Length: 466
Image (tube, rainbow, N blue to C red; front, side):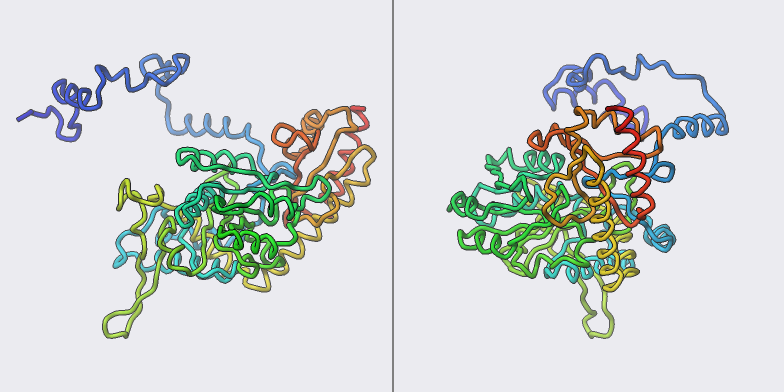
């Protein structure tokens, strides 16, 4: 019997520490931190200032935070996966109520009916938006949804090859590889035209085989252009016995055909535009859905909230269903390692979608399409600029090439900051074939006046640099 010196710290005795060290196969606690670079200061080497009062601490923190540049202070044209959409005040008001202010999953249905209903309503609205039957109550983000979709496709088809578009977010790509490399899966690229971004159908027909688990496309693409021949791509996937996975920006579905209409088996996407702030890049909201096919549903990651009734049928209630695939229940036999979700982001998305409604989604989509085309047109009129992949319709995101400005795109971005404008994201490292190209983005937060201001300042900046 080991006597504890502190009942709240069970491993504070040397005897217990030695048992723990022996159990994990090391000699000292220092070995636990052997992977941490030596240049990173350890607790014993930290030089901490003397204690300060609350007033002093608040003042110091606010001084540090004041160095941040936000979209409240600067006009931002930065997109590429996280966008500056407008969040109605009602979303903040409802989501901040005590009944909803949690990011965790309600495990006790008998005391969590309000939260469970919110998740159920989110699933129902997403299902209606994408026209796919089964939706889970969220993944972490678009990238993790893609990784789970690829693994799910291999489990369903018993194949190990997945095709992805060439123009894909580098963050999503590296996450996909993290999910699939341990399984020995093969990731292959779809050939896309540099002229309009379209996928070469004949090329993909020649490449797919009995090893292909899935074909994945994004519409709109990472660079903002719209993919054509979606029904053809779906048929190519199904003819070879593979699944058709589609990634979407849900805001675009107010004007674009929903993926359920052109044969998608699995639909994923990013729900951040649905009432969630950018928050410096997170937390985000991963959308995940599939057709109501038992073979697919049983391999579904995450969890689904369902609705049921009492035994006598007089009252209805909400509960979690089909969560037996997760690691906290099935451990190593689980089909997914997700054991939580972004429930608060889901609640915000549900509130946002209920506010917009069908007509609101359509009007917002029309405005985003119009302001995108206006921005492309105005920028293309600047001498020395080109809009790659111009021969296509874009939604929110589009590319701007600065090759004729002596490859000074980064310097131009720095100059724009001096005028309180955040420019586009550099693409040269990820897509060298596009040259000195930047990814710009517009949302409903931008007006024609904002675009005109960008054009005027950009002209002046370029003239100073040339």
